[in-house]
Amino acid sequence: MTEGGMEQLVAALTQAREAGKPAMITTADLPETPQEAYAVSRAQVGDVAAWKIGGANPWSRKVFDNQEVFFGPLHPHEVFLERDTMPLGGLVAPLAEPEVMLEIADWTAEAPTERFSRMGLGFEIPAAVLPESLKPELLGQIVDRAGAGGLWIGAIQPFDAVALDRELTVQMTHNGGAPTAGSSANVIGSPLGAAAEFLTLARRYDMPVARGQWIATGGLCPAVPVRSGDRLTLRSAWGEIGLDLG
Image (cartoon, rainbow, N blue to C red; front, side, top):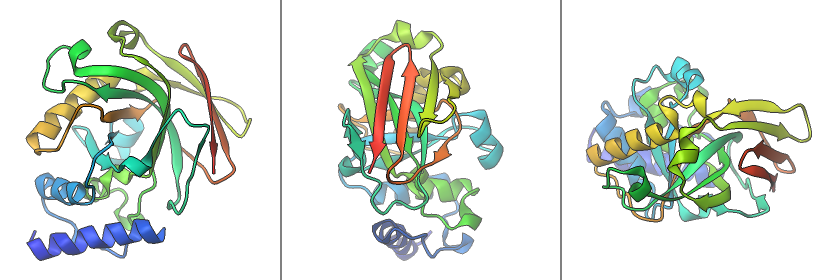
């Protein structure tokens, strides 16, 4: 991919998010390698507040046919910690899925107790700006920051490796409807395993991983479409949390 082509793709994706519209790009605009795709993704974010993992559960892999997880960076204004509400703003066709979140401590350490300082449970809000024809494309997902929209983190507590070794089951309710069951067992290799795989890939692609950033480790159940005015609740052994979408 030429430098000019990369700059044009970064601009197209950035402008699409700002406008709240799908990007006007085609397959011909995509890079040819994951390394180039991650360079495009990284160029869209200055200060990274969090990372979202994609392709970490069976239903995602059926779509993307990926053999390893992929990921994208999030801006500080896209990450919300234990607030009552989260604005959807101009997000394009936002979805919501519950995920385990991990806060990075010393990401170069081998022991999980040194790698992570806190953990939480919350909702990842995918909001891809890819045109429909490119959404199944793995390299498209990577350049689109894995469909980054927003991240809401609740139930924040000190990191507990023992708790994460146990299966965490959740019940997600959307607007008071019938609950949807989810489980950490749906994340291939577990949330800790997905986070470890991400850190390996981040080193491979020279990403600016740092202490205090969060990792969204993959969906515990399939995502649901959401819009402003919706309410999400999540029940688990970690307590009950709720989020109003503005």
